[in-house]
Length: 282
Length: 213
Image (tube, rainbow over all chains, first blue to last red; front, side, top):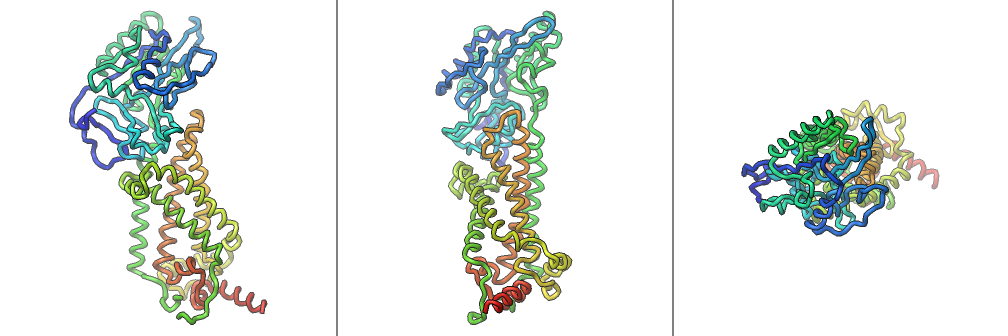
């Protein structure tokens, strides 16, 4: 991806260099048409050539309990029972590519996390120092720390494919078109049409999950039970944690003023009062 | 000056632990500031790169914690506030203005030194506990993520508090009190110095020496 398409760079005092105007891309996940085949998981592993993970038998169809540094796309299976019967809910757990990324805000390493003009949030592991702040900043519990390299990994939205005009590997592999890829506008149009269909089919609470607390995401999800995102393991109203914002905002400002004030204070004291009685010196 | 009667102010162990605490704190301060603001990230580069700085920072934190604990063991009795301290505190402005004649005499440590000691002890404890969470943030379950957020803020606030104490402490020891730095490095001060800065302490050790004779 070109330097001209860098919209945000972590831990930098200079403005990001991106000047090129490109449309925001989005991956659409329609949970109501997911059949749980996990082709997306395999495609992700294959395209990114990630080391294999040993699967964990959890008594469900789920491959692993949660994402790992080597496994960036996990279909999570949940069972939900209501008056209409048993519902098998599947959700694609991966980086949501937030418009306002908590990981990037929290990151202290210059250039370790970037956001491209098309909305992709990407980790540059060569700049990562493995502090874990990005994991603390993320409201979705996505970035994972690798004890081997002591750096953090997550879905790249197949930035290497997208930057040459291809769709992400998971979308390419999806057999039901429950995964689709395009501009945010296109995807939201399709998502809303799908929500209308679901409502006609009796899922009156169906909704698009594009949480405004993080400025919207580049992965939008159609939920049949849109009023209860928790059923799918999604936070109801995710945002950058308030204490992380406090730390990177007012506290940082206050701390800098205090430290500079302290240095100026002792300097002023020295100029005004100087050292204590020389006669008492050793 | 060289022939002036000299007395031992800091034993070898005390000097060693002070140096250990001071140098480890300095490393923690510089690398910590690098992670605090991008404007100071170059400090981490100078110290071997961001990756190495992040790798060593927690281990150096353990060294500092150990040194502070050691100081607590050897100094806690002398660091308790005494009746004389309240008089000293009331004369703080005189002390700041270097009008030392109007400042009541201190024991081995004056009230300001005691404050720094307790600040570093409590701040160090807060930094250690929050630092352990940040070190093993990966092991904190998602359900307990509030702990991560609290630790992040506590670590920064406690660091800022100790930095305030550190600035004043280093300034006092190197610039304001002649002989202060020498005392903590070489261990000895003149009797005249002790009479000026810590008269009650001098009187006590003199009478102790007297009794032993």
